Amino acid sequence: MRDYSYRDKKKRQRLARGLGWFGIGLGLAEVFAPRQLARWLGVRPRPWLTRFFGLREITSGIGILANDHPTGWMWSRVLGDALDLAVLSAAANSKRKDDTNLGIAMGAVVGATGLDLLSATQLSRNASAKTQRVVQTVTIQRTPEELYNFWRKMENLPRVMPDVKSVRQTGDGRSHWVVNGPAGKQIEWDAEIVREEPNLYLAWRSLPDGGSTVAHDGAVRFLPATGGRGTVVRVEMNYRAPGGSLGRKLSQLVGQSPEQMVQLDLYRLKQVLETGQVMTTEGQPAGRSSSTSSMYDWGTTRG
Image (cartoon, rainbow, N blue to C red; front, side):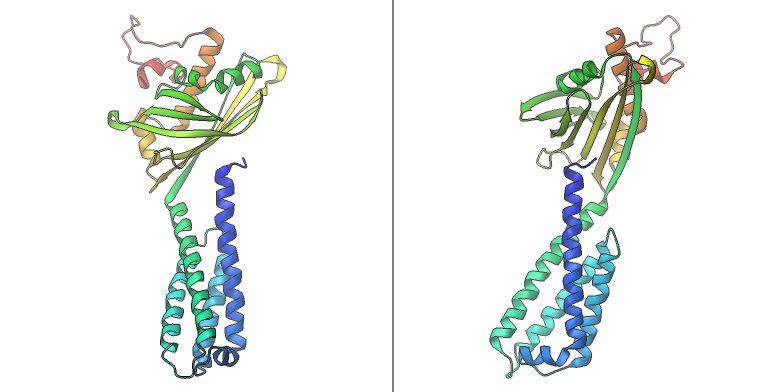
């Protein structure tokens, strides 16, 4: 699914790769033309030191380009930038220095340091957010149009998602969600629809300014089932929480895994749309707190 999260990830990767190529180009100049570089700066040549810095730039650049998640290599660039700034600051005391060229070099290194720090921070933040992917399906004896219309009117969703307290559409494909969290704490966030194909597909993502520390995105597909058996509803969701705590939080919500939670929500959707009500075992003479099938335990395991 090509959503906002995907594009954000590609932007981070493009920035890191661009800095990797920049480092390789600078490193090659330092390795093969150390004396010319020193003359341009107006400082005493130190070929061995300049070549060492060049090899460091080339190594980190290759490391960045060779890895999909080059967080460590980006931080190595930040440390290298600090060394470069220290050397240029020392060169500023040289009587032979070229003030103009040295100023240009200093400005370039400061700019590169800022970009390296930005990229390293972004990659570190992304690495610390553990993503959990959930995919579940259910077949419902209703048409794709009926299912799409029910889901698209998001105020309906608390009927089949007991932990969702309310969903309020705020316009322009955006909505505000209130969910019952652990220990009675409410979790709120804003979300927006990023792609929709009527009667077929609906994709959304949470907004970073929505106030929730839990980021997520997802999509639901409505596909005609074979043999006229109704519609296959397929839900795909990605959850991300700082420090990888989301799995624990979701388990605390219902005492079940995220996969079980989504599957039970889909069973509730099936019950509501096929029968108009949700079956529960509460109040039955047998006195059991739950049925023999998790498919009918919504009222007891998640209420």
